[in-house]
Image (cartoon, rainbow, N blue to C red):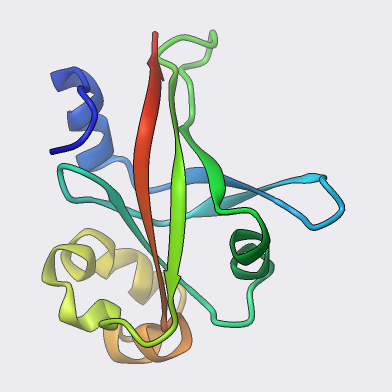
Length: 135
């Protein structure tokens, strides 16, 4: 099902390439990280290196925030709060055609193939939004 979001926010979630995921470190310090993501209509899918700090943060504190960049004047704000789960043995990005299509050019730009990217970023993070702010 998912939380209610406006058509404008859904469109941004489907087209924007980079967002910010904020996790909380064990010492309580927030840790914002730019990420690639896929919105599937009810939640977010992110792929990460298995040794990334954000995975350790999620293991200790699964509550996260996710936000898209605002416009130049601080408008068009989109923030989602929710719970993240990590699957170290889940399907790789290459098993997710929508993700590969969205990031095909970005993957090439960083000198990788979809296969090499999926092997290096093999941990899947699933975010279930529970609350949203859109302005």
